[in-house]
Image (tube, rainbow, N blue to C red):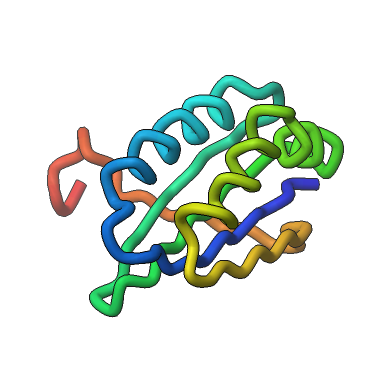
Length: 108
């Protein structure tokens, strides 16, 4: 069953550049992990950041969460970057996808 991690955070002032470098590295790590499905990140007007990462199952999500490089980044985040963060991990119980076909003319 797909496992979804939702990570919400707010950064301290003046850390955007250093955080950006670490964020890119952690995104690359997640994408290279077995079981990775997708990742999306958003930033609200109020500065809150939200990252959603999906893995194939709980085992592959845990492997990513406990990866030594990810654990080191988490510790660095607490000591250097975050004013606040909140992590939620859930099993997906329902999913539905809709996409407009891009190669079909309207009305076909």
